[in-house]
Image (cartoon, rainbow, N blue to C red; front, side, top):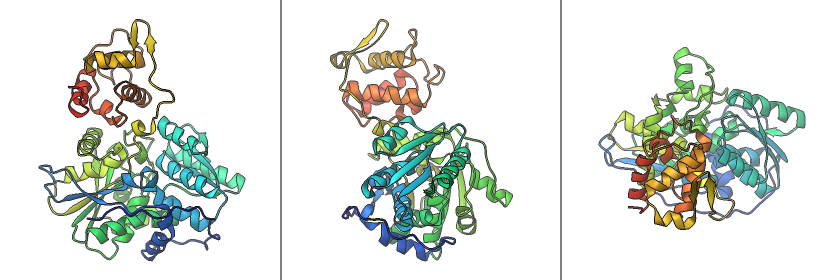
Length: 422
């Protein structure tokens, strides 16, 4: 196993503009690794959870420990440094925008991030807090990318897509280089698939290696599996998968041929499987968001017990990004009141019933009311998690628990067991 290596993070001017780019090649990954070294860390391989499906031979590539919280920092850094632009435009569901915003602040660049309608509010807030401009559009990823291209054309900015760019793919491919260097005997590597930049990069890293490369997609948006079956890229409608970083609708022009020519298999996992993998990682001490847990969900579904690596692609959970703007305060709606002192005097179940009632604005909500049936959505889940963090003083409670345990009673049992409220 490897250990994280921290490097110097000194700001520096962008490099001169790169030559006209062709398709990414395996050799480009070594160039990318050298270029991004001052702005990234080499993430470790961690022991995976021992389960009946995977046994003790599964390792986790800990990209949730990458600077910026996800693997996206690698591709963003490689593109920005190579292109040498002073103004960058991108479309992002969150993590790529966060990665670019950190780099833009370090390098003194202007950044505009276009967000689709379903983007996580906490991620948008994090991008804005880092100093980037944000633009929201209706629709899904396709509409987001169209607006980003139009803005770049209108302003003369450099367009740095979240996946579909040779420099981005080469940067993401450094994850694969590290995996194969640190686990040369791995038989399979499981890779989460959204836009396809990470999978394409791993495919390039494994071009001359016998490892099986398996892409794992949310079952609600299997754009690469559908496209490979059709023999050409196909576009799917917008998706509401809980894996918000993997809501791509169509394979990219750069990524599709790379994946088509090297991937060994594509696996689709359902929402319950994604949330179960997220919770399993959390209980194993890995702070992953649902998108970051998709590869593990694929490994659990495949059930192969040989040496394998699942890439935990990110840890930018909404709960982690959602930091309270004020100290714990007195929250009241109607007859329901909660204070910091109250949190220590009532049971977790009573506390959660009060929080659910307050956030969902349902006076008759009970301990067995289902979050989804009560009209809960991503925003209210973030609000419930943030309120619970404030009241219990436990800022590591992940938002995924609300999705996985949607009634106050079920959620209270988990909080009591995992956060010392028994």
